[in-house]
Structures are given as structure tokens and as C-alpha cells.
Amino acid sequence: MTIETRRENAPKVPWRAVALTLFPDMFPGSLGQSLAGQALEDGRWSLETVDIRGFARDKHRTVDDTPSGGGAGMVMRPDVVDLAVRDVRSRLGGDVPLIYMTPRGRPLSQNRVRELAEGPGVAVLCGRYEGVDQRVLDAHNVEEISIGDYVLSGGEVAALVLMDACVRLIPGVMGSDQSHAEESFEEGLLEYPLYTRPQEWEGRTVPDVLLSGHHANIRAWRREQAEAITRERRPDLWLAFNAAPEKSGCEEN
Image 1 (cartoon, one colour):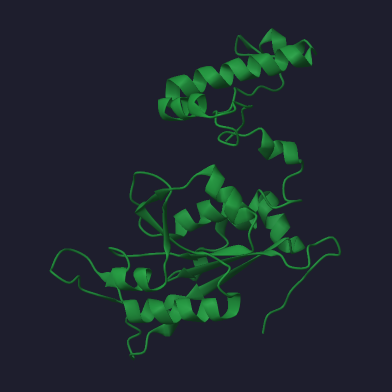
Image 2: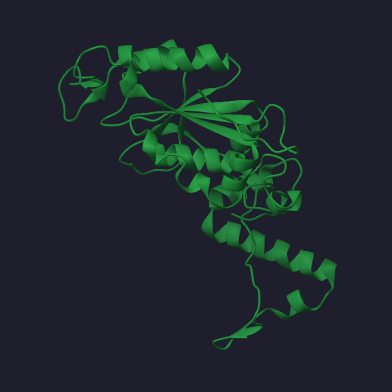
């Protein structure tokens, strides 16, 4: 039985996130806190965990086996993962993309996050051990996504990253649409430096332009800072930014 709590201002069909995992207790994790957690409570999005081990057919509930051709570690069995995927897709339909978090996947981008956030939701397959048998990924046309050039113990943390990036773009989750419209990667540049009170701290002061009240000068300063930071830290983004047909504003991370 599923019990839902929904406030009057919540959307009728919330954005859905499903995690296929061997460790369902890892969810919602940080997504149960702050704005994402409040939005979850308000019914602006929903989160379901599917325990892959529950689809194992033997008495030991085996979900993995040794890699074909030899090698270290274990590989998640295609027959078990297939049953879990079929269960999810039978309930969500074919419109919800199925994503496998893996270091060999295409790098996650803000553009892809935006596309996912504007859709009905996402189902995320969280690998463990050495990974998932390739045949089940091919059979279900699974999209492979990476959050960086490093290896984690499993896909759950990466899934939380993907979900967090999407949830914050759902209308009504952030306090203001401008909060994410001005962030890093939204328009091709990294974010400018941020300051707040006190005006002076440990001998360091807030730049005078930010205290001037001159909005055009503030925008220009932030743009200059964003361009300089992007050029220095992410030359790949800087090249792409300059190659874009139309250059536009900057953002935050």
C-alpha cells in the first residue's frame, strides 16, 4: 500500500524518480533535506526505491556472478536486473528514461539535466561490484551517464547527484527561477564569486562595485569574473562558449 501526502499547491502528476538498487536504505539520503526534501513532502516530486535483490529467484537471493573471461570482482546478473527493469517499466511506461550510472557513460551536462527535469521523471539503475552485465543494458536501451572521471563504490551516490540536479529545476522547488537561471553551466560559463555580510572580514572586503547599487556595473563585473574563471579553470567550456552562435549570461554551481 502506498500512502501519499499532497498539499493543495502540488502538481497533479509530480516528477517521478525511481532508484533500482541493492541498497534502498541509501535513499532519499540528502534529498530528504532542505528544499528537495520539502518539495518531496509537498508532493512536487516522488521517489520510489526498487530492491533488485527482491527479483532473485534462488533461495540465496543471488544477484551477481563471476565475470565471463575471468577477472576480479563480480558482475550483476542480467536475468535478475531484467526482472527489476521490467517491473519498473510496466508501471512507469516507456516515456520515463532508464539511466545507468557508470564512469564510462557520457558526461552529465546541465542540458541533459534540464531535459530530464522537463520530462515525466527518471529511473536510475545503480550498479554494484564490477558493474552490470552488458546484455541487459543493450536489451533495454539503457542510457549510460557519468558524473565524473572517478570510481565510486556503487551507483547510488551518483544517482542522488543526478536526481538532485533534476529536482532543483522542478517549478516551485527553488525559491526563485532566477536562482538556477544564473548558475554555472546554464549559459555556458562558470559562476562569478559570491559575497555577503560582513562587508569586511579578516582584512578582506567585498568588492566596491557590489556595494555601489549600480546594477549595470554589477552585471558587467559578474560577467567579467565569470569569463575569467571559466577561461582559467575550464578551457574546454571557454572554447565551447566562444564557439556558440549566441553568447549569453553566467551562472552558479
